[in-house]
Length: 373
Image 1 (spheres, rainbow, N blue to C red):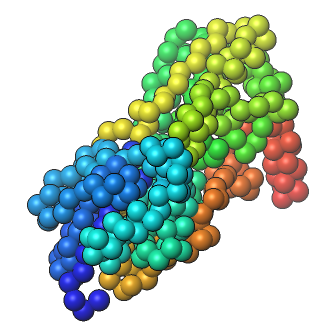
Image 2: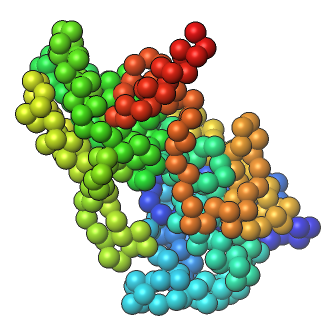
């Protein structure tokens, strides 16, 4: 683009550490390198629908690198194709009207899989869109890492570290429930990093007998405490996921939660130790981002600005290995990236004795080690 151009920016879905760092990077890059005008929409796609926002100047995004949340606000209920503020109507035409009314040349949409799905549908209607993958859950297809994940893992790991001292002092089985929705990335990384004895994730429905065996073995050898890290989307073998509530006016109405208490009830009476549950909840999404997430967010934002300047639309910035590459939005929409069975951290955890609540995984590793021994 040789002439000055106007770019909109919005943060869809829930809040996440690093959002402000991306806003800062996109805005500063576009202004400094392309003499662009940047317009920030309030509360995600709601601002695009309602034409609610304001221009962002260079000074507006200075000093926000370390701040959690988003200066633009966010909303996980503003789906233009099913807008609950208007009775579930399709108001996507109003997004196009706002886009044209403001004279925008492109939009940078920062968000998770829901945001990327909406961005893809809007791009099919003619909007020039570049996506940036945001979620603490790390579950977006096409990218090895999303910003916000490292911060969430750090917070969860520090919490479990603190739980260790209480567990040891009172000889308890301590269950720590993390976020993550239908993917186990947070629980896996925080569980292994904290040395949890059992890590339960959605990808492997757990066998309660296997969990009981771990607790019993530790009690028998004098280790009178057990740490269990469980993802909110985990479920017992043959059972169902725990649902905390249903939010009818949300594009993703199911709110998971409570599996930690379910597990505590399953263990009660079957282990000698007292069982307690701690739910970390939204503290994993709050506060200042880690240095890694600040740098990752800055890189994502700078690359998004570059894609806009190069007029490469209908894509999401993705981190694959050590490279930032454009990844088609159509391949991201309506898909979830889960933990594969052969993930290196799963194998490393098994090797040091971590249980994932599935006896077959441990047997498989022992077989592999026997074959190479």
